[in-house]
Length: 176
Image (cartoon, rainbow, N blue to C red; front, side, top):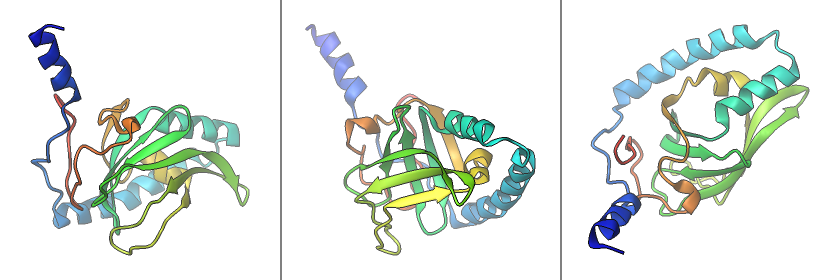
């Protein structure tokens, strides 16, 4: 391997550096207010969809996507949902990637997007949160999504986080 090839390979594997952007609490408040409207609009849009159509929309919205999300009580986290049904999350103040799985299922007669986390502890409440199923309008409205990318832009499927991010850090991938 030439020296230039070595440098190119090393640069491609270099971890993401800490963010220059931090989500302010004022902006987080605006996001939460806007989220309610986005979810209500989406609820109206999807109310007449069949379960099959809803499942298809949820899978398309999640499969192969990296999303940076803000949620009250969680802060800013990054999650990659692999088409295989596996997921990896870069959660605030965690030293390691959180492994899990995702899919759709019927819960009490309604289609939901469900996420199962292994060893996920909320940094605010310090409570273990193993499984969460959310209403489709939460996922399909992208109401709490700060940014979304196609693919595993932070390489979370390699089972490592680029750095231990703080609660409101908003990282960006290399070159993006």
